[in-house]
Image (cartoon, rainbow, N blue to C red; front, top):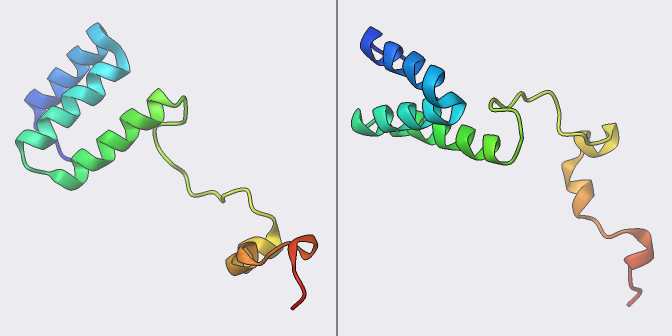
Length: 87
């Protein structure tokens, strides 16, 4: 994400006067104006994560799966033994 010094000053001003929501909105406006849609999408994800009370940046430190499930994700798709039917 590369901003000109003017945009950076605008972001600082938005933070000081409107908080994180204002900064994210200003960044979204700038990326949309610059037609930088990938970065706009990332800012939109940050806005949603903020609304949901999640960290703004996703860290891929794992998804909370136990070791066997994380090694074999297809195992989650198998029915539980109590749900199996016999033909």
